[in-house]
Amino acid sequence: MTENKIQNNFLEQNHYCACGKTHTLSTKAIFFGQKQIEKLTVFLEHLAPPLASILIITDDKAQDATNRQFEKKIARLGYRVKCFVLDSAIQTSVQVSKQIKVDEEVRAIVAVGGETAAEMAKFIGLKHGLKVGVILTSPNAVAVLSPSAKLLSGDTEKIYQVSSPKVLLCDTDFFKTIPQHFVAAAFGELVSKCISLLDYYITAKLCKLEFCHYTYEKALDLIDKTINAFSEKIDAEFLAKSAIEFSLLTQYLESSRIVSGAEAQSASVTKLLFLFEKRELPLNGELQFLLSIPLIRLYIEYFNTKPSFFVPPPNNIKRLEHMVEYLGIEEKNAVKLLRPIKSCEEIKEQMYKLNEYSSEFKAELELSYARIKRAEKIFKRIYKDDGYKVFNILEPHDVALSISLAPDISLRNSFLSVLKDMGLLDEFM
Image (cartoon, rainbow, N blue to C red):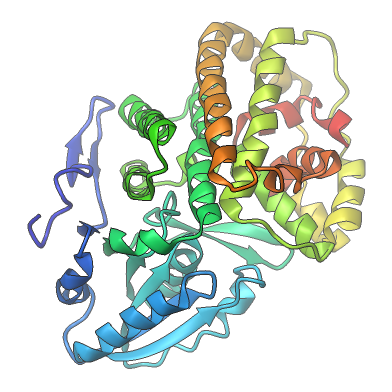
């Protein structure tokens, strides 16, 4: 690998695509593999000159020994180091970001850990105009390099457009001591992106949005290869490489569409529910995978029944009540979140298009259903109890509430949003 380029086994820095665009990467260097900690000096040079002050953001779920090791090594290289540790018991939020003091002498931010640390580092980097680098110590990387950061803001999670990290270092030697449930969560999150990809595919046709077949097929190929690899053995290194490359695809699209579909929207509602009820939060990847299973079934069920009868518009009054009662959102804020009700003519046009493209949609849905079902068995077997505890985390009520309110909590277009517009999610409430 040259010092100024993405390794050849990742995506091209500039890809001239059949979609008519030249896709480019904002991340300029990736150091991946064993003994990559030896490249720490070159990694830091992409961010700041020697003797500069660097802010490290990490979280207490990442291994303490790993965090300290990088902190000491960076300090020994002549950099002045400040460190902020995120409390994993508290949801990553804009409020927490205000506790992070960034002195004038700080020249760059380094996230150590996985997605949690990276999300906060990207957000702080945006606020202060600083370059961000990521030292990845977990295979949980699907959104690490994306040009967005998701943080709790007030009552709900919001997605902020940010600059992608400039450089990433991943020493796979650190994966040897990662708890298995971390690996399961990372695997589950990657596979759950089948839902995001379906949302990207379906809404692009329904709304005549830009669509890149190369990115779509490449993303599915990464999921397929990971499922195939894990069917042979649990390989955290292979998973991390797939997740990093998937994350780079978001830079090709210049958006987080392929990582923030209905599974991520629904998981955001579940997190709000658990926080309000003071229940212990599972890992984000676990939540997203668990919710991808009922979502894919729901999507398929629509095209199997294809209702052509009149359905009353969404009951936004009941949604408002549920947001206040079950999620603890203030009523004045909940009113602002409600997805606007579409006109009858808009719904008719939407139903016409769904019928027009139904054969293509069904074909993609069936393939993704097969992926998720195959991955479900692998996901369970990663746990010592074969997934017994994790598959009992969500009650049927949790799932129904999360899916029904997801289109209001996040206004991003997904097929779930389409179902809500047509009044087909009200029965979940």
